[in-house]
Length: 195
Image (cartoon, helix red, strand yellow):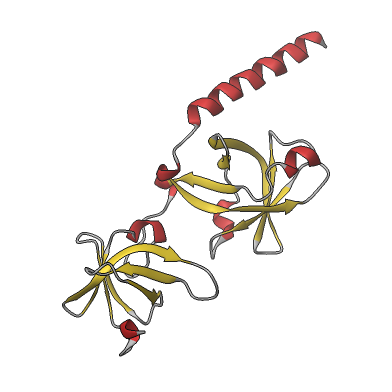
């Protein structure tokens, strides 16, 4: 019995050392979702995923949790879909309701290198920050932010006069995404920039 306890202690110590080595910077990661509530007395958590396809996250072995100390990796014991839009995650480090409660409203991240490159008019929001937004041959401005409040996501674009424009992100408005030249070509409804 004592030998088994020593082995477990050594395994936990090795895992904790690995966790410290794995800590990442937020700039090297993308946002996955937010822990919204506890699921069970065993410490399982429900996570609202920022994806149209939450199934892609079912086989994760670990994920980064944003804590006051930075992004900290948590190992996943089990992960499954919950009511099609949430993930139910059982973290190895979380064993009870109290520990689970400490992660409520915490954001989850993964390394950028895990993202599948997108092509054509599809893009990740983080990848287009700093791109020029053009209409025909005229530069509207530089994309400084993506605003996701409400139903419609918006480009926040700053023009050469430092004026901010909010432009809907919609497939019908986007003509081309040119990653090489960091430019998005759009065709806007007449008068939109004058609002």
